[in-house]
Image (cartoon, rainbow, N blue to C red; front, side):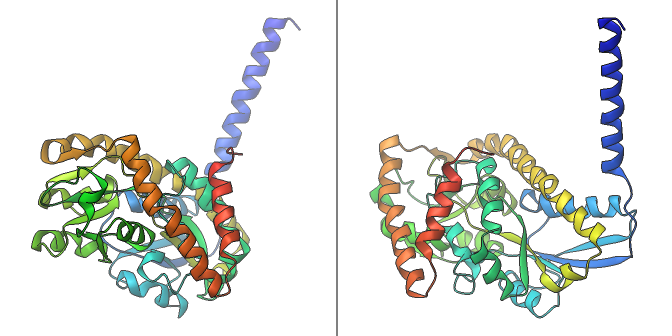
Length: 346
């Protein structure tokens, strides 16, 4: 066989193999008819692109036999959903650990501010590894839950009313909506943090009960329309994120046929890729809109370093002390996160 003919044959084999792989990936998986409820809040948005993709994937790959109904606040309010999952009212739910950190003290590690997680690619790696940590699995099992997906929420930025902050001292006395570790960081900077459900942030800003609000940017600020009632936007504080996983009830998972479990595993990276794509598309659309409406505040590298020095490491150390006082090996957890965040992607 000539070299050219060999190359043609090799190319044809590759095409056939690729087609076979694609066919296998799209093959309908047979199984029993099942209906699961998945609780969420707000409205369909970039932050729910992962579960919307999961819903479509399971429907398509089972020929419509496995249906997921996503209830946006129709199955319960955000702070109720962990308890509703535990008692078996739901098969799946989105939660944010920051809405009830004392119920999930181990998982609250993901809420620490200024972790070295610069983007959603690194975050996906860190969160997937964290979900496999024995301490996380054990804690979630106490709520009849297993972590399945991460929302991969982007780093938080502020929008605000009134005088724009130009330096670290300008946050002193400012009433800010900032959850969990981000709230702790802002307290270190002299602000007055408060926890407000995402669905209540617009009204809180409009009425002036808070001066500024931190949300994963830019998608959440657009989703909850905070830019409509504010005057400024911080573009590079990179405050950190919060852990908002999608959980599956452990008993419902155990009851799944093996072929459906395999589909869920196949769906995870596809669903998380959909979330990352949605965030990127949201930024492309939202940043020009925000620039027309809001004053962008960009801090110098020295100012950002000052924020992190005042609100990062001290909050980490306080978290370690508090959680170790509860019998949790918090130093191990923090070191695990930092190692995963800074090690090369495998």
